[in-house]
Image (cartoon, rainbow, N blue to C red; front, top):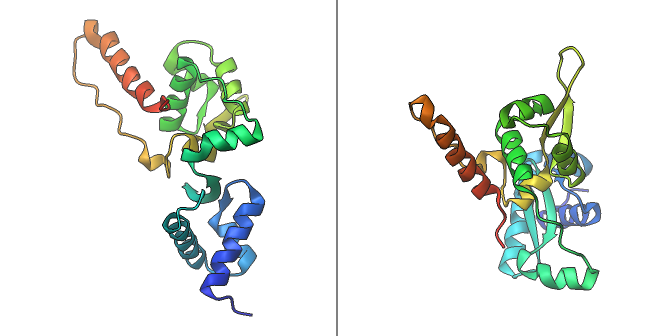
Length: 199
């Protein structure tokens, strides 16, 4: 039986609601035996419908994945009912590691440590536990070091649709060696300011 546009939209909503996690548009298309373009069109219509009727639910696009979420303006009420405590804020070191990974992924822990100049094992582990970083395979080198990249949760937390939405890094001008550390600190501060979530 051929599904109508309304049925396709409703099926997409049901799949995303039941999943509770970001789902690839391709997977939804396979489940409904439809072209991916048809499904992405239905998802766009679903998002517009939720916005037009001022629903407490919104549809987020996270790279090639989609997820139904409660709107941020109702976070306090949702947290109160579900007794959800706010997570401990990320440390400056965690924001720096996120920035390094986001702009250069996939990267090894050794690469991150080379950029930052300090051991990052604990920070990387914490970010993985929080679902902001994840393993992306292994590098084809001796020892087969793990590669890390950002997750859909990273996009959601920083209100990004895709990594293409990341701000451009400031260009590093030709400077004297004595000024190099000062410029690096300025660039690091700009990156940290972007990743700092709003209160």
